[in-house]
Image 1 (cartoon, one colour):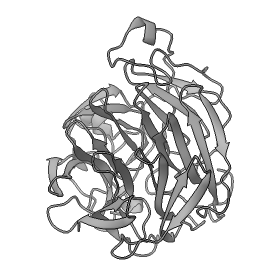
Image 2 (spheres, helix red, strand yellow):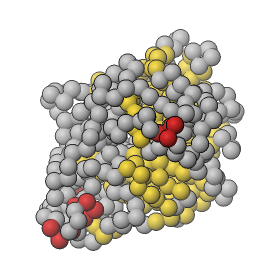
Image 3 (cartoon, helix red, strand yellow):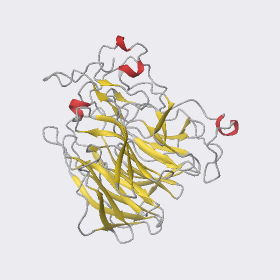
Image 4 (cartoon, helix red, strand yellow):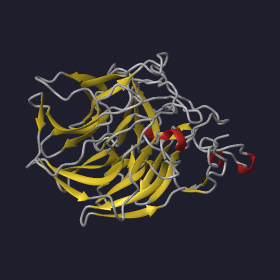
Length: 433
């Protein structure tokens, strides 16, 4: 289901969150910052100095996990809230938030860094969050105006809490959004694949190029692997599997037009950085998740499996909260949870009139979503889910995932369907109110 028909989002009566605007919180950290040893168990010394402030609802952001300091670093994104089937003006921000995994608290870093943007790509390595690309358009601009696409590269030092722009020598990738970016631990370099180069918000132009960036030489290198290779795409997910030394991508879409057909993908590919060759691990046809874009994929290194949560697919649900695991040993998918299911779909011709009981809600899982972040803490043995687009706007919640068990760490203050947040579901007037 396309976002127009399947991601209705409505204004809700939920209280607004304690959103953080630039300058609302100071720098901070706690024990374990900057490569020091840290414990997943909260302690007064680590947690008491942290405030109770938190980011505003957000989607289209980027997030990484700093293993040494047990922190999730989040940058940018859009704070816009869709209403019904409309596309609201973007409200991009340039905020950097740090989630202390042990304490369950947020801190805003105030270092000047990248400009406001969304749909950028990020990876973590060598003690830094690396950020590339993205797009921006002022919320007051007409919706027909083109977006400004970016090709700049930045790094955020977790220890010093400082951003620095990286100025590569020579040519690099063209400006883009929704690309996959990973850090290659063995070679200490970044790998970038695909994305969208169109400046229009109504149609996309998928890319299938492959690049690597070496921080030591400060240069990008374009690679041209021989066939077979994944099709050009955007909105795909990417991870680096350090156990097998490979760059893995999943899903995405190769085109998008508001008046046309979307191609949803569910294939899995792996790049060998040593030989720079691609191998298809799964064709996505049988015994696989529904094709989707903007899903969350991470490597659960404890179970040594790839965890997939959510995304937007071509079923009547659209936004999903199903859970899948990919076994890299035999390249097979296994479903962990079906998630919410359609219960009362809209009548024909009323695709934007969603009843309160549109779905049967699985309260043990986070709200259905796409454009969220999913990162994994090897030290703490769990993944973290944060933010994203929902059928009722955008959310600001945090969940942990241990194996296939989800636990709510920080409740959403808005963006959930009415049956989740209203104490008496019979009082819901529609999906969100």
